Length: 118
Image (tube, rainbow, N blue to C red):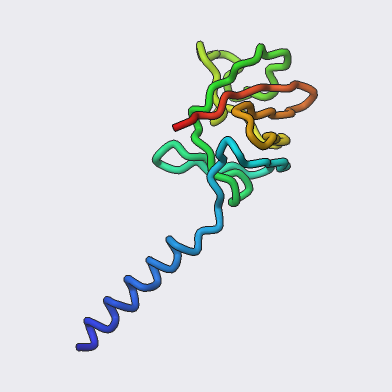
């Protein structure tokens, strides 16, 4: 009996943690203006920006790069295509409502990314 109660308590805690996650997934109709200093990468390729905004790490870059500081981790072995997960924090993340374009301001460079739409 005690084991059953403890098991139900454990399941309830896990369920509460899952439901109470206050991160928001970026959608086309959403407006976001966020200074990003922390990026947490999940095993499923999702980025958590400032522990509050969730977006897919493979969101593709659609603008030319002027300043390589945004991708400082790739100085010697540059990738063929750039995606959002490769941007080095600290940057400003901005998205207008009803738009599929994400603007990232990073050390004087303006990077445009295309939001994945379902």
